[in-house]
Amino acid sequence: MAITKDKVIDQITVTENGVVLYREATKIMEDGVELTKTYHRTSLYPGQDITGQPDNVIAHCDVAWTPDVVAAYKASLEAK
Image 1 (cartoon, rainbow, N blue to C red):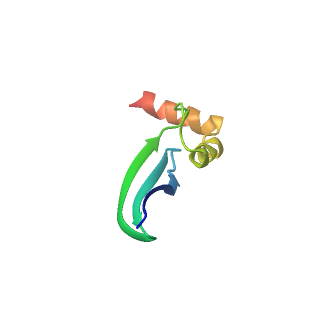
Image 2: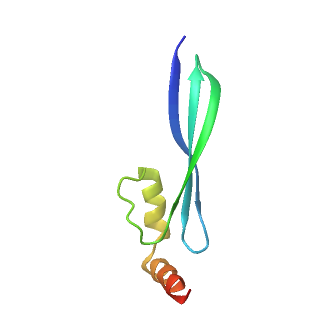
Image 3: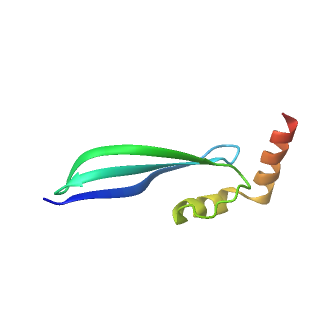
């Protein structure tokens, strides 16, 4: 009987204002059969420090966070 714990990023979404949302699933498996699954969600905002985030999430941020997107996001915060 082998019990394992697997973590995987199973969703990455970019909103229209450039916020990157991702979901990490944690699965507890016994002999290849899933016993439980839990989720943890994280939001990253344009221009935020993403040091230490998963590589595939950083890749999405690098594409989505153009200088124009970051500037528009910061401007929207200042307007509030």
